[in-house]
Length: 401
Image (cartoon, rainbow, N blue to C red):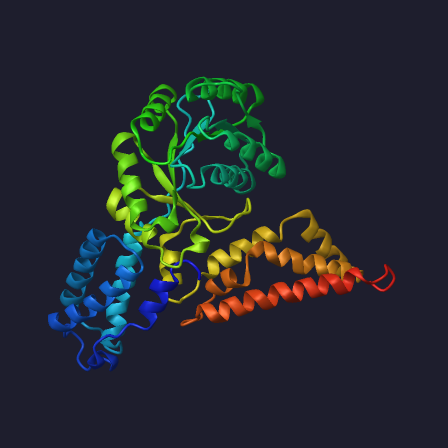
């Protein structure tokens, strides 16, 4: 299932009072408190199923109720439509209301912007550091340097090096270092020498929040004054992700968060709970395993997705980015010159995969009630058809193509 499926399908099939299904007869009347309470109880059950923090549910529904019983009904709208409108408005507020970019402000004129990527082991810090570097380079024209400062997990340094090689990003390592401070210090010196304008530090993690982890991060933070201290959290942890964020935020000064593995979570409770519980903005969400599977978090667009209204702006941006590469420009030239052949055709189909899976694309279209079975079927069919087409073209001679 896709992110927010539980919440999205639940809200689209919610059982609201039957008397609400007719348009309001008199402009200016208000919804009754009893019926609003019934509707809020139905919403509460859906939010609990989506693994939203209970404290957050309580404050969220109190705001929805206050707005629903105080605002007059508008002529032509059903009470249900008006209530769902209030619900969507407050949901966007719950998600953070506004998009919050990274600061990327250097502590001094001579130094590059410093980003500390922190979190527990297994949250996806190393993969997220790679995605972040790719995003800053391709979307903001930055020249990032990745820093392997996770000295507690032996495979972390190798993982960062191998991932950086694939996306052609430089990596700084300091073999045999016993703490993060000398690594960051020498990495900044190298960044200044090589004119890197952003330094992304993949910091050490632990299996749980402990004193040693916080002490290491706090020392680095105090000494180097990073522009951004970003917490990477596994979105599949649900309410536990909020507890982790609160534990980090009380001991070190976080500036924001990135939630990962949301392509495998159908509930999305962590996203809905985080801003309300901690005040931390969500900068990005991870929706896959490749270097490009990092999306800027737009609260309003996410609210539209949840209510089955699609997210055409994100889809448009993805298509625009996919069409900017040299391969796409070459493909366009071959089409316009009449040289388009089966090899180009397979290349075009493969290029579509950069936009995401069929499930992800369908989730960005305004198709209310779209269920997991349909999306899974589309995913399976599209993957099978691409393999069959590649096999057919692969069996052709150059002349046949």
